[in-house]
Structures are given as structure tokens and as C-alpha cells.
Image (tube, rainbow, N blue to C red; front, side, top):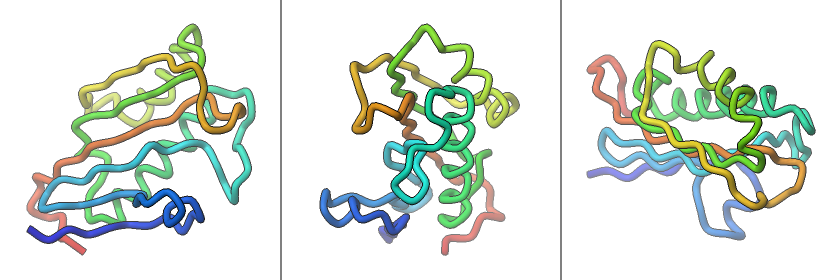
Length: 134
């Protein structure tokens, strides 16, 4: 099966040795994604807005990989304060209310920058014949 890598252009991808996303066959794995724009934390202190920003980034890479949010089968949310679960969950629900992927939310002690409140990983499986492989 063909393996395709998708880059965000972030300097860390080559330094650490990872891709924003990898597609093998009909499966797409998206790396942990945080609310960053040009190496700046987006919406510091705002759990809801960080989650929305991340999921919009995820949607963008899915489109680049020939998929959509409807192909998402799993999300994993790593949060620094689980007591704010409703804020993360409200944003997640706005993107996935009708799709209902399997989901995990766990609290972690910290993320790579103290301004990040959440990091999200996503798995998608393209099952719709209308999605063409790039």
C-alpha cells in the first residue's frame, strides 16, 4: 500500500522526525495537534477556543489527505485540566455531534508549552468512494 506523508511545514517535523499526518491505504493518522499559529499559542487560557482551533486544523489536513471529518473514527484529547471537560467537549461536539467517533479525554501533567491546554490526535478511515487519494 502507498504511504503518503503530509507536512504542516513546522520546523519540529524534521527535528523530531514526524509528519502532521500519514495516510496508508484508507487509514489516516494525524499527529498530536495543539493550538499554535506561527509558533504562537492561540487563545491562551481558553480551552474552548483552543479545541475549536485544533479541530479546524485537523479538518484542513484531512481535506489535504483526501478525507473529511465524516471519516474520523477516533479522537484522543490530552488536556491539562480535566475539570474543564465541558469546554473541550462543547467544541468537540460542534465538529462531531453527528459523526460520533470513539473518543478519549485524559488529563496529562503538562504539554510541550505551558500555554497549551489541549492536544488532539485523530484517526480517520476513508470509506466513502467519493474521496480520492491525493
